[in-house]
Image: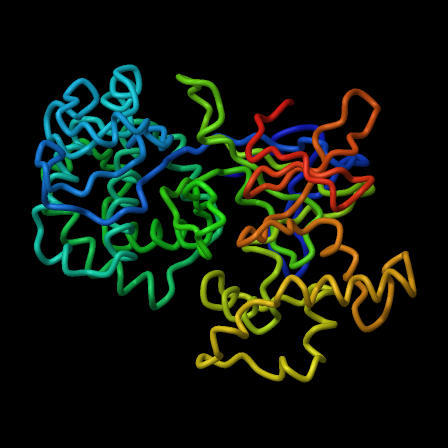
Length: 417
């Protein structure tokens, strides 16, 4: 099954050495929304717990288990709020009776409820690291998708990703657990439930899952993931360490009962001409060369040869990718980037200095809020008029494009299409 381009703005093309990618089918403007994508499946990133939420000692999730919005303080503290608990297992909490109703007919249907309940009682799985437990959650969601939406299941299988040693090993552990949970009669026989299929699914998940992050806080140096989602069209965007587009989500800021609060929006960072590949960065742009290459080869199976990497690979402190790199070398300090950027733009405002040609990107497009490291993109243009206000895709901070140091004081803002 092949996916057509999601809009007239983009087209899917085979790109030499990079596989499938998204290319601009017409000139694109800074701030322009080029994609709004809904997940075909979502699953929690939290470990299993053996206690039900009716237990006063239970460590409850502070997120809705269907839409993954942050629960109101009253719902987080009131474990007896049976109106928003799954009436069968009492392990899963929802932000409203409406969300519960939707979940019981989709993400937390009877089969999923039974399967998750049995996994929570499986001592062998509970001894496994978080990554393996989350993979089990993904497989339950994926096999449920096979029954509830065969077309979306085939879409999942059409995404990039082939089994490697790691996914095969995970499948060999998880497949027997999944097959023994409860009757798999609900899973369509034509999908060929097998170890091979489980391996294939895990490989699709590894390369294509997008993390839905926990709310930003300046006090947290590293944000955790609340959930993962498979976004079929967004998965076509390739990586670049100097992206020309970035992803926004508004999980907690969209109106109540908005069924699209887990959608992701891809917005242009700056103008690009027709025919240019549109790329995202798969992680914060402040990471240094060694850290970026290590993550890309381990998580995605490729080495990056973008313009930025070609420059930084010649720097003396990036001679090799070492597993025992010191923590302080994992990211490049923002002040270091700004000092280099300031020097570069003083000498050459066009930012084409051979030693650091991309310095201007960090001065203009990287958020300077403490522990944020987000990417800034203009708000969507109003008609033909471009916006001079930049928004951070992590903390939501607004910043004037005319004056990089102006902080509008907004932590989060809703998206305006």
